[in-house]
Length: 116
Length: 116
DNA sequence: TTAAATATATTGGATAACCAATACTCTGAA
DNA sequence: TTCAGAGTATTGGTTATCCAATATATTTAA
Image (cartoon, rainbow over all chains, first blue to last red):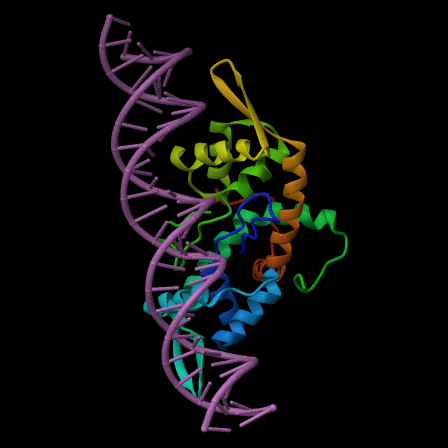
C-alpha cells in the first residue's frame, strides 16, 4: 500500500511483501513487471528502493527465488512461499471481510479489476 | 494488522489507523473498547504503546475527538474523519478486491464475523 | 488496609515500507 | 561513437506500526 500523504487522511502503507507474494502466486515475473502490476493495483509505481530490497528479503527467507534470463531477472515463488501465502491470505481476509462487504454494499456494481 | 513474526511468512503490519477509523465509524468507543474490537478482528490485542499514540495523532489531525466520561475517555470520529475514511476505504478495497474474491472462492461459506 | 485488576498514557527501541538519489549494465537510436 | 532509455540494484533518511516497559489513576477484592 501507499501513503500519498497529501491524498489520504491516514497512513495506508504496509503489506508490501504480501502483495508481491500474491502477484507471484499468479505468475513468475521480472522486477519491472512486478512494479507494473503494483502500479495497476495501487495507482502508482513502487520505487526501486522499496521493491528490490523487499524481493531480496523474500529470497533470503526462501519464499522467492530468482535467476538471470539474459538481461532480466525473473522472480518465482517457492513452495514454501505458496504455503506461507495461504496462511497470510486467510488471515488478511478474515481481518477485513466485514470492511470489504460494507464497501460492496456501497458499490452496487462489482468491478473485476482494480483502480486505473 | 499484526506481525506475529513467528506465525507469518511476511510482515502483516500496517493500516492501524485505518482500522481504528473504521471501528469508530460504527460507534464511539473507549480506548479499551477499541482494543477489544481489534483483538476480535486481528486475533490479539494491540499494545497501549501502539493504540494511544495513534489515537492521539488522529485527534491531532482532527479526524477523531475525545472527551472524559468519568474515569474513561470516549473517542468519536469527526465529520472530517468520516469523509477521509470514505476515500481510503474505497482505495483499500479497490487495491484488494481481486485478492479478496480469490479467498472467497477458496472458502465456500461466507462468514459474517472475523477470526476468534 | 493492601494488592490486584482495569483503563489510560508515555517512552524508547526495532523494523518494514516508503522516499529520493545514485549507480551500473545493456540496448537502441541519433 | 555517444547518448538516452529501460531494468536492476544500493544507499541513506523518514515514519508509522509494532514491541516491551513503565507510570498514573481508579475500582474492586482479599
